[in-house]
Figure (cartoon, one colour):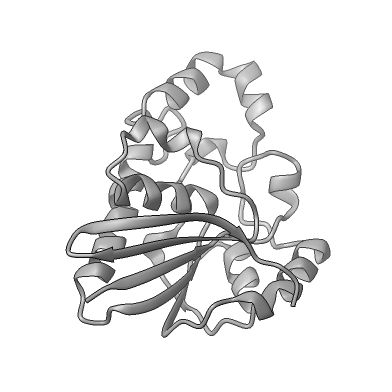
Length: 192
């Protein structure tokens, strides 16, 4: 059976605006307002999920989704880098940042590697495609999770992960059947 997985990236919040790794801060009023305005643009889905981060849960709520939590969709765990900006880290730990960006298996922050993220998200995605539920699935997930899903689904080299941009409040669709996936990238959710 064919499954269509529609991944929605969360509304912008303080961490995105400050270009720092998210430390589970809530959306600000501007991000919440944008998500509420986009609520009417969502396609219908038989099942809805949300990543456990505050910004994903609040985005799902603002979009009026009755979304079940999906721990497999949690963001890339960046360990001791959480809450810090990439600029700050590049100045203080240039070798570690360079290794992290060049090697998908590296985790100099003490958290999760990009390879581990791709495997985790890929397992969730394959479970949807192999399950008997089929149909349409909506999921609010952090940009790193959306990138990992695309890399896994299309069997791209993991080094491509950092080359994929996922804008806030966009819809990325993966349609799969029998281990084969098709991708439709980044349709913006618009007001009304």
